Amino acid sequence: MLINCVAYQEGKKLSDISVEAISDYIQKPDCFVWVALKDAQPDELAIMQHEFGLHELAVEDALRGHQRPKIEEYGDSLFVVVQTVEMDGDEMSVGQVAMFVGDNYVLSVRNNVMRGFLGVRARAEREPHLLAKGSSFVLYALMDAVVDRYFPVVDALETELETIEDRIFIRGSQRTNIERLYELKRKVLMLRHAVTPLLDAIGKLHGGRVPAFCLDTQEYFRDVHDHLQRINGALDTIRDTIGTAIQVNLSMVAIDDGEVNKRLAAWAAIFAVFTAFAGVWGMNFDFMPELKWKYGYAVAISAMISVCVYLYYRFRKSGWL
Image (tube, rainbow, N blue to C red; front, side):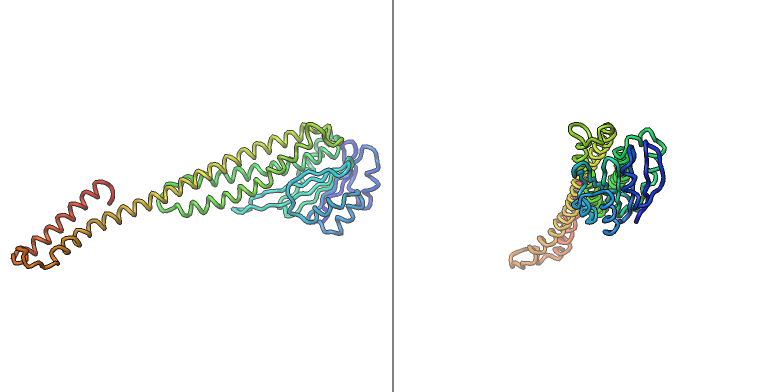
C-alpha cells in the first residue's frame, strides 16, 4: 500500500506526486523522490522497480521478508534492511523496513511494523538545511528512528529483569523465576538479532570507502553506530545478569532440596530408633531376663521415647528440623 510519494528539491518539498511521475522528477537537478510503502505487494514493487531501476535481487529480498539486517551495494545504489523491535504488552513484535536508496530517490518498504514513520518525514521537512543533503539524510533519519525505538525495549527488558531479581530469594518462586528468565533471554536474543548485524553493516556508511551520495552524512551514520554500540553493550549486560540469576535460582533450588533431604534424614533417624529397639526385643531370646520382667515393656517404650526426644532436640538445635 502506498503511504507517501513526495518530491523534494534543495531540501524543500515540491509536492505530492503520482507514481507515474516519479521517473520525470528524478531527472531534475537537485531533486529526489521519497516514497513510502506498507506491506507492499509484488505488483507495487514491480512498478517501483521500473520507475527507479531497482536491482531484481534486492526487490526479491524485499518481497521475501524476514531478512537479516544488512547494507548491500548494487552499482551506485544501496539496499538496506533493518528490523524493528516493538513491545506489544509483554510480547515482542519484530518487523522489517527495507530501503532502496540512490542519489535521487529513497524507497522505504515496511512490513509487520506497528508504528509508522510519518514523524520522520515531518522532522526532515522541518530541517530543510539537512534535507538538502539529499537521500542520504533520509536514510539516516529512517535508520535513526528505528534504532531509537530499541531503547524503550531495552528499558522494558531491564525493568523485567529487576522485577525477577527482587523475587529470587522468595521461597517457592524459583520455578516461576527460571521460566521468566528463559523467556526474557529469548527476548534479548531477538533484539540482538536486530542490533548486532546492523552494527556490523553500518560501518559501510562512515569512514573508509562509502557511497558517493553518503559522503556529506558520514557523521550522522557514525552517531547511529554509537547508539547501536550502547544498545549492544546493554544487551550484553542483561544477558550476563540473566545467566547469573539462573545460576542463583538453580542454587536456591539445590539448597531447598538439601533442606528437605536433611529433614527426611532426621525423621528417618528418629524412627530408626523404634525399629532398632523393636528389632532387639522382638527376637524373643529365652535367656533375656527383661522378657520375664513385668516392667520390661514400660521401660522399653520409655527408652525408645527418650532416645527419640533426644534426637529430635539435637536435630532441632542443629537446624535440621
